Image 1: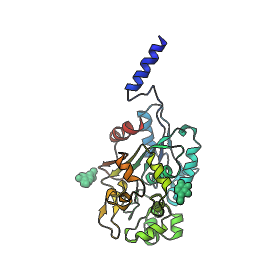
Image 2 (image 1 turned 90 degrees about the vertical axis):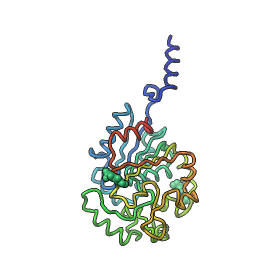
Image 3 (image 1 turned 45 degrees about the horizontal axis):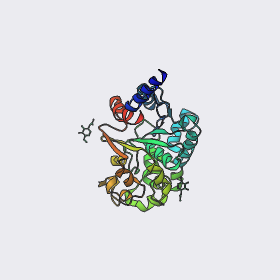
Image 4 (image 1 turned 90 degrees about the horizontal axis):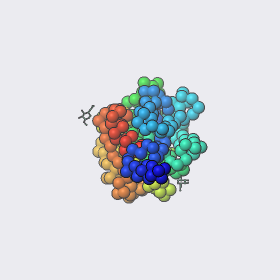
Length: 299
Ligand SMILES: *[C@@H]1O[C@H](CO)[C@@H](O)[C@H](O)[C@H]1NC(C)=O
Ligand SMILES: *[C@@H]1O[C@H](CO)[C@@H](O)[C@H](O)[C@H]1NC(C)=O
């Protein structure tokens, strides 16, 4: 009798896609955007509860960079992205809940930061990497800072005049993914973060190998984004080199054509997913999120 129930359960597990009884859901790691913090009830705190309500028993970790909420917000502006990624790699490796892998959700700059984690720190492994409005080819402009924040004007000025000065690169996070299409050479030689993770400086084969391990790399673009310039960076597109009006897609870029980062291979394997939302930066509704993200990638 016992055996029969076991057989039924096993068969049911194989045939059911919502096999709550059969497997524990994979944990989720989230990284917030600029000006935000780990547990903001209006942003990631809410996303965390939506996930927890939709997937019973799921473990969701929203990263805090630093030892307090104030530090977490400040570090989003002023702590070198390479150091942040290094710190996060340690946090993740020391969390026993994550040892068999996790799904990663990056919001805004958290999108490119979690990609750096996937490329640099393959253990524990990232399963699905989902980027919401991430700036994977950088930004060239910051029309609205997004948050009522005293640093916004200062940051805009510094980026305009000296994004590639070394003290700015080392001390201002947004400069580390500033991409000036009129000075591609300067970008390549002075960007201490983005040019590295995009294999613009050297072709790091480890980065390619690790990206290819992802199950899916999902890129969510906000069609009505007023914060990120150009918006296509959210899908890895950018200004055609040498000017700042015409935008080319990932597929038209040298990064893809020469497959410097393995994205062409990933695309051919069907691992790149391009989603678009009609809304401003990070504005999506709960139903969209549950149907397109939670149900497809987190269950
Ligand atoms: C490539 O990336 C890996 C992972 O971050 C790093 O350990 C290695 O030193 C890098 N190799 C080169 C040539 O930069
Ligand atoms: C977003 O932009 C599209 C055009 O790209 C426009 O048709 C639509 O009305 C806009 N939606 C919102 C919510 O602003």
